[in-house]
Length: 330
Image (tube, rainbow, N blue to C red; front, side, top):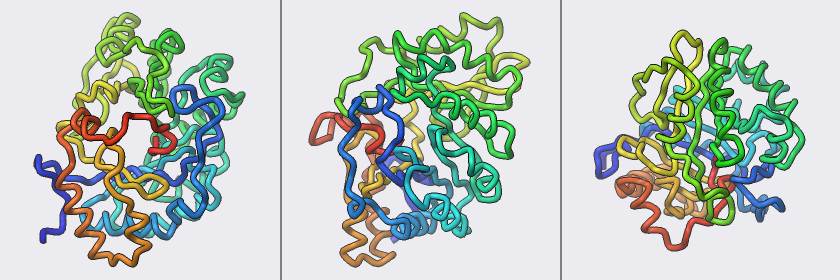
């Protein structure tokens, strides 16, 4: 058996998104209900040792980039120790984080000493009042301060902005304006139905084309950049601006053709695609006594069946989309 990860469409899998927790200290409207979601008991979560073993096995099969997500990763006790553990995996080229920024400020200097290359910071409004309405929490100052600290660090900073009709679409140009003097990447994300109810917060679809049209109306000259292979975003730059901006067509799913990603949730559910409902439980397989070779064979055989795109994955689901992104791994 060939020990590398290829699906039946010839796509090489090299990128793992690993959720370390389903807990979050915010309650963003597009992610979960105001009362939150049903949190997995501690014993159901993957342990850090199990997470390390999974990533090590996958890295031996060619996965060289890992993004750690949540929920909010910094709410799980011992997360920084886990990062140091991950730093010992010599086969990983990149270790990146997605965070809401509330708890990261005290760890930035330590993160600079690890393999962490970039931070994706979720921030959906530059207006304090609107930020509180979206997140249902009054923490704007902490997040904005963290944004500035990361920008001034050795870490690459990307801002994730979920575009929500009637809520923050009037701020798209303001976000792009941040890139004038800051070496950051702002990425606008089409809203998805992963909010715990299976329905998008707003039924009006702010698609890639509509988002780009809104941004273009605010600037005289926008340049299309060359996208890296398997990039999740289509990237642009305002002429003479220091930073860049991109649009992630997550809901319209026009980025699937060269997908190189897989996911493992905090409870150990393996996902070939964001839109599938989970392929198998890595946690249960590990705890049943599986060897590393057993794991490799399972990953190789499962990834070979990765669906062509998110529409095929969604069509094969046993139930309708109803999860929270916090449960899946943002």
